[in-house]
Length: 68
Image (cartoon, rainbow, N blue to C red; front, top):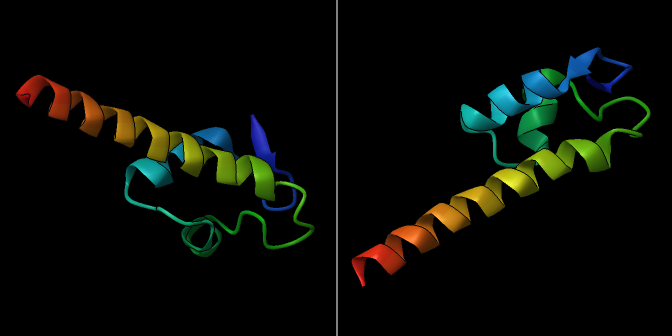
C-alpha cells in the first residue's frame, strides 16, 4: 500500500527502513522522502515507528519477565 503518494513510498519500504534501524520521522524523511511534501502521510508514517517501539518494548518486557 502506498503511504506517501507524493514520493511513491510504500508501507513495505517504511517497515524495511524501520527494521534496518530508522527510529524517528526524520530518519524516514531522510532515507525515503516520506512526509516531505504535502505532509498528509505524516501520521501514518509515524505510526510505523510507534508500532515498532511498542513491539520492542513488549519483547524487552517479556525477556525481563522470563528472567525473573
